[in-house]
Length: 216
Image 1: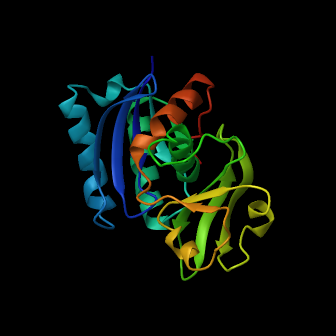
Image 2: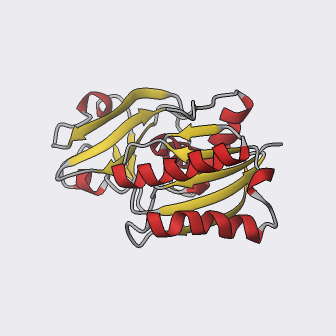
Image 3: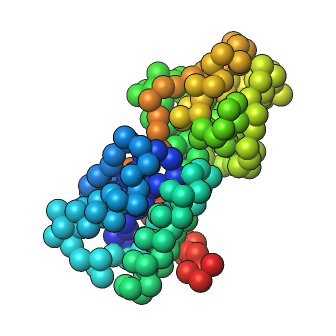
């Protein structure tokens, strides 16, 4: 049963979770702004100490691979690589967009969504002006449309909205509310990137030996 430390620093949220066999054991996070350089390492150490564990007892580290803030991602990857090098454990890369999507699609009742295999999930991370980083996923977390940067207007996602209900969420989705008025557009509030959403994906990647090259 793999013990994995998960680091999320792609947005304003600085978040660290500890998971075992895909189940979260603990979470420390702060959403007050770009404090990753100061807080990410402290949160990781605090979480390990609270669970009376040493970093050498971990089986792997997972880290957000982006998209998102370049500075935040660089801080997260630097810490993750350092811990992996020092403890001779593998590195796992997790998409924050997929992590949010899997969380929402796995908890439809919590977000007042009908169980409908025809739903498409559209997580969004805020970029500049009317631009967002986004991708599209189905109920099983399978990628329908790859990660890209999109400028949102009133015709965005029309080709999908004509045949499907599309669920928009993440800190970039607020930009869509004023632009996308199609009746098949559904909006879920309060979803932000978080290390708690990485646990099951990190466990699956570990079991499938989906590791990153630490040198690159």
